[in-house]
Image 1 (cartoon, helix red, strand yellow):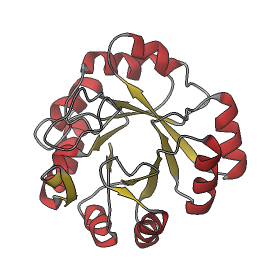
Image 2 (cartoon, one colour):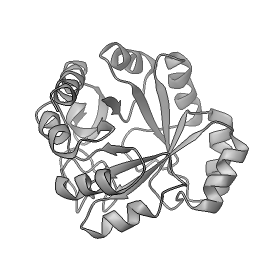
Image 3 (cartoon, helix red, strand yellow):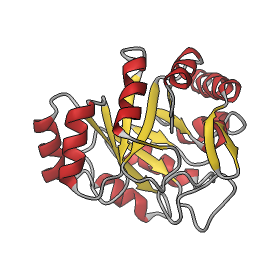
Length: 231
């Protein structure tokens, strides 16, 4: 069971998460309105500290695909996570892989209903991973992005996510309101390739993401892996 967390902001925080057992370290660039958005220089400092200790994932929220290509080429994450206006289309995926050989693509899919299954299937051959996530409606106490994919702090219908796992030929990361309290049940229900946590493993104050709660992160990893062993 692969474990992943977003949105890391500091080198020491990222290394603490690695020591807690996290496999994928994620951060975000390109939209200052998003929680814990970083500058290029801040992101590079985090990734430099992580080195080869974990897989480095970057959500690139730039609206122009050329900006995504340029930042990916300069930052060199292991995985680019797409969840905004740039998608893993055949054309864009080919451009990104030509520009940054060896890079992998994670495409977010909003699980709002059964239509998500067909949408997910459309990324076969173009995305290396899917991130099945919830959609924020309105605002909440953890600074969710208004009407965006992810950072919602709520779960979605895991039965639909399980259908995607069973019917779509792309490894799936399950996200959306996951934390140490519910990741065991989520893994047992959906049986994903990996699980992702943001809101429930983050210390938040007045809607601002301060940093990761390392004990909750450690428990998230422990419970996810225990669930996978017991399937």
